[in-house]
Length: 340
Image (tube, rainbow, N blue to C red; front, side, top):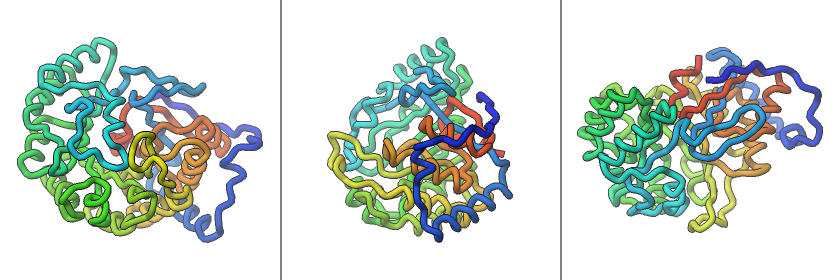
């Protein structure tokens, strides 16, 4: 992790974060969230920049082998969710057999890599078929000392036990607050309770599990986000990652209007009020451009612990506020071990 100390810069003119208008009610909510956050954690923001995309700003330059993502299904996905349609898998390194996975990681190790995100396309039951890869993953942990983060989809007792024994560092699991989302967005015969059960199963086995909540994933509209927060808070997670609908070209949702930055900020601030001792991260999935700058600025105002792939304007904004910050090339889902 590269440490930097935020220092007050001259006022940044024409910066979107400075000209943004926020209503008084939201401003008060953000202030309360920020105060609670700084009571529980140090006043510090970690910027996570893994090798999922090329990232080059004056403060930090990523390398393609820092912390890449690997897909166990290549570009294949049975479900082809309406928000992704397999597009995200196209950005990952394919490793469709245990032997290929092991060889890919060995090659990455020679290039200085210290860890990776492992995932894959979803099967028709909402799982990522991991069974035949577990031994290879265990060898990668033992022989290469990799930090391994896994995005698994739905998990049963058997798979949770396999992941625990393989020594996986963190497991990511999606959590929803409405049955409409798995049914109408993911095309799955699954319910909210199935995702909660995955979270509970992993936690009961002592796996470091990190719930992910995507604001506006239901066609850009809020659908059960606050119910999801209530569900998540009940399980006292190690941390929470909050993202937002990121529309991608070539997907059924490419023309959907994403949730407003203010809506995302309300979810973040509410999460802090509900989970004062839980690290909260603004994850990598969210709209781009001015929307992204404004969302990140509001997240900073909420006292966020970490942000994945910050815009350069956001880093400058954090500097202008005098907030200490640091960069990490790892996946943001290990922030539970970094945030103090």
